[in-house]
Length: 213
Image 1 (cartoon, rainbow, N blue to C red):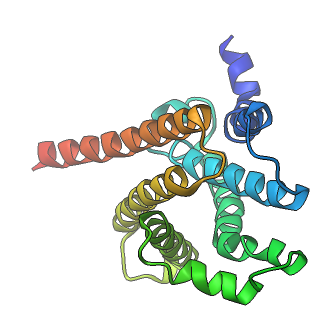
Image 2 (cartoon, rainbow, N blue to C red):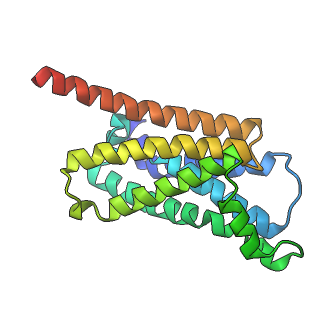
């Protein structure tokens, strides 16, 4: 059984982070929209699910290290991270693509409205999450050039990820068109579990540091 789990761990990851949200979307009773809008929405939701999955696909998760070698885990973390981050950084721009094919508000006007609507809690949380994603991306790409030790960078990376997940999850729950009960439960469970793993890892590291002192 253990060998089977190790051999299928990549399929399990795909099932958890991609197939599960797509199944929830497939069976959900949502208002009918154009194929383009649904495709953009589904792509964004899957990307967000992948972003949440990064909390589990990290060396802070000792269970996953029993299934995947650390070197392969880091490679998988980067692959999923870069893919999800690219899609989510494009998210504000993807929102206005349908405006090129519809009458009414022009794409530029729609985009300006999105990024300047500070009276909406959901929008503000989304802008904060987007900024944090950009900051995480830059600090990850430039990690070797930053004046930090690797251990310090990992703490900063984790703290930024924690804030980003909290803001992004609340943004999705506030404004998401597809956040029915099933999707809400999925997002809350995935977010809560990942945050717990991250905080538990940091608490363990602090405990070990205290014991050395």
